[in-house]
Structure formats: C-alpha cells, structure tokens
Image (cartoon, rainbow, N blue to C red; front, side, top):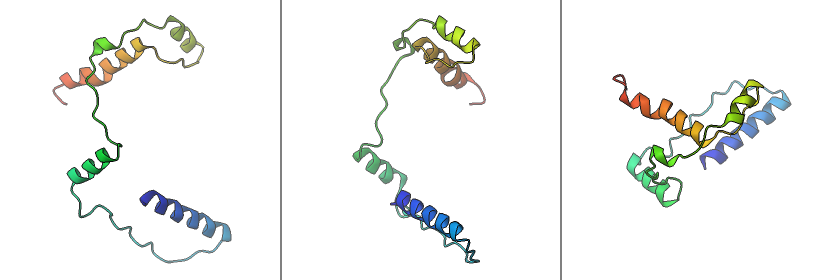
Length: 105
C-alpha cells in the first residue's frame, strides 16, 4: 500500500510540474502504518508471507573453486569478469570474517 501511495504521489507531482503551476501548500505528513505494531509482529508477518527466510549455515570450506586466471587478465583490460568461487571466498573472508575479530567491532 505504501509503495502504491508513493507512486501516486510521484505521478501527481510530475503532472503538476508539467502544467507549470506552483502551489504554496505544505505537504501533509504521512501516517506511520506500523505505529501500533511491534517489531516482532512485523517480522512474523514477513515470515508468514515468505519474504523473510532463515539463512542456511554454510562453512567457508563449502566455497570450492579455483582461482580465475582469465579473470585477472580481463581486469587488466578494464573488463570485469564473473567472480569465481575462490574470489567469493576471499571477499567473504576479508570483509565479513576478519572484521569480526576486530576490537572495534
């Protein structure tokens, strides 16, 4: 409902701009549609609708694959290749696993 409402507001705003009319009216604040609901009830509704799913437990060893030698050659020519599973494992290790050991985190 909120997305449709936003699309309608944008369409009306574009129509007003095309006509060239300007109005000095203040915009009415949008009402919070979930003000009386808890975060838990919202999450339960999303799970029931299939929008939230439990992530599977995956080990880093599950990402099997060789280094993409062709990928490094393509990168030298400013072409971004599809990442190999080895690249995925390396990026996950650098940006997801290693920061967890940081004192700041």
